[in-house]
Amino acid sequence: MVTEEALPTYQTMLNTLDGVRDETGASTTPWASWTRAWTAEENRHGDLLNKYLYLSGRVDMKQIEKTIQYLIGSGMDPGTENNPYLGFIYTSFQERATFISHGNTARFAKQHGDLKLAQICGIIASDEKRHETAYTKIVEKLFEIDPEDTVLGFADMMRKKISMPAHLMYDGRDENLFEHFSAVAQRLGVYTAKDYADILEFLVNRWKIADLTGLSSEGNKAQDFVCTLASRIRRLEERAQAKAKQAPTMPFSWIFDRKVQL
Image 1 (cartoon, rainbow, N blue to C red):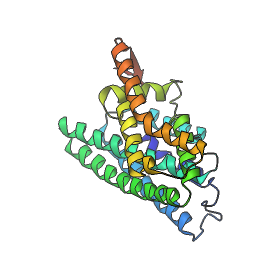
Image 2 (tube, helix red, strand yellow):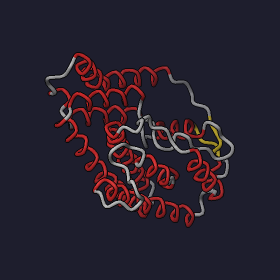
Image 3 (cartoon, rainbow, N blue to C red):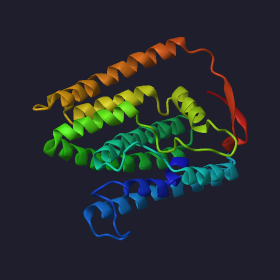
């Protein structure tokens, strides 16, 4: 929910991309119309989840609102460098990640008897899936008309690693809040390193990266890199899991400083 609520940052990020930004704030170009409509739809997700959490009475809304305030103030740096190729590769990956994480949250909520939360997260996941479809089709077209620069952009983003939009979040107490939150999400299976590798593999297959021809030597290196990266990520994750010791616990201000195992 915190991530969804920081929408001003994401619309701003999309409007930094060369050639597709909203030049006036009310431009009628298809790019600008899409960005504003996408933002409006994502805003509903944040509103709905915020109201659910408020009415549940189970979280410290003051600390959650602080986190949202700090996150919007901090912004984000996805490494897209005003480049629409990088921007749409990032959004393709990120939208699939939110589709997966909301879907997993819905599944866990249903298992624990909260059918209303399961319904909410399921609906949001379906929205994220449609967004993913739109962005992956844009990149698919980029691969069709400019395979060289697109595969170089894909490799560039994967070398930087895809950070989630809330990577700069802060609640006024925990300087490493996103790292701790991510550790819990990994342990519970909400969003994991395996999911990251699966998304990468999905996009490689979706965009038929292995079938690209006529690339330069640099393009071929980028092609090889992205096509083999998922298996390397999985091997590293397996080793990390094998070496993992008993995780420490951390208090989370969102749930009244209750300690949670990382």
